[in-house]
Image (cartoon, rainbow, N blue to C red):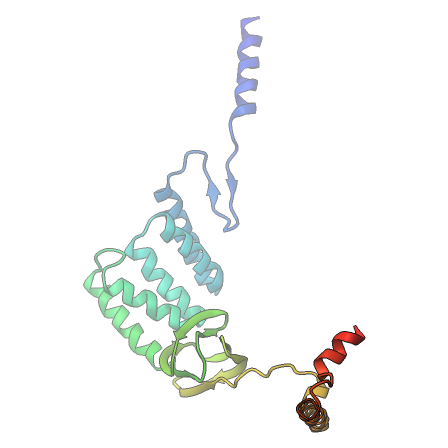
Length: 250
């Protein structure tokens, strides 16, 4: 009887123990895994993903790893993954943060490696000079990301990845601008965005010159009639003024 009771308790315990499962990165999640352990598992997974050429997946794993546990090893690996994915701008931004000590102290060998990578990606990036002018409350976006806010003519120099980019701009008093450009690695390009005043939607008859000629004739005729009425009133004090005739008709 006691043996059956022990088996029953073991069965109940098994029902309430959470089972380990894997996340979207394929890393098993233990019930009581710490952030540091989880970050380490993601780092190991990213190395396997990079060996398989899956750089986008490796970037996702390493970004999550860094959020859980910032450290120079994972940040350095993310630099390699971003470069492998062709995101030279992202590589450069993270590289500069690493060299500035944002993720901890670097070994001399890693500093040398990062400087070598910096030289390599500099020749791959595109230097884009974006000039915006002609409006007020001007704003510009590159691939949906805000890059410039200006109240007058201004130039902003951007380091961007080669390839196709969509540039949009808006102003409080100008027509929206939308352009698609294709940039080559190492290229220097200047793009001028000048706003044209927005057109006022007037009805077609409003822009017809003959309507204003007719309005002028009517106005002139009305003025002549009033003048004649006033002259008559001076000649005949008992005459009725035009305004009095209108009141009588009402």
